[in-house]
Length: 258
Ligand SMILES: [Zn+2]
Image (cartoon, rainbow, N blue to C red):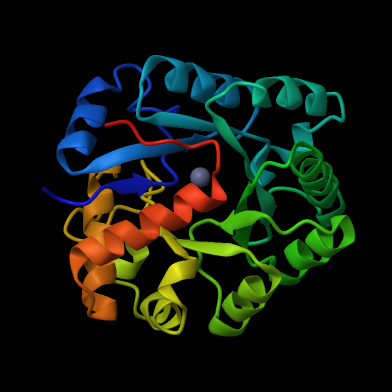
């Protein structure tokens, strides 16, 4: 009996999963995945995430406007997100954040959408799933302004000093399949305490070794957990138990089914 894993970030609300998620969910369960968090990137994909959660016991939703969609953000969306959050399987606000790698929108536009949604998360006492590419100082500045740090830095790709700063503020970090091959990310992960870390696939992106170049899927979170165990030289079950416990403590609305 393998220990239970949680894929804390998988876009089952995207193609190729959305039309028929069952084979992917089936493979995930066979790989020991007991829960999957599906984040939204805009209102329609957030609604799809809730819908998937309603129809599949191991799926949970997060709702939010991604920095890529920050240009479309309007304050009225906050009311829509707030009503989606009342769903018992909506476990977080996400994914939200800032991205200056792809320059989706100006700093001002991205800040406005992020700030507003951090405030929303704070008012609802929900954790955040934070997307950050080349925006370390901007993210921290807004979290400090709102004074809310209950969240996960998803797909962590920043350096070790920033990782420490996040931990000092009480944020938790999550690693993708990048830790199966990207040396600089592996080196950052190694400096961090396992009780602050989670795992995710970021499906359909970021496929781990040996599936690089292919469509990623939640079952492959097993490969992320194995890479993590090898890296830290820890037994697989300990990695599974610790990362699962960390996810359950941050995402307090998430429950595991037998
Ligand atoms: Zn994502």
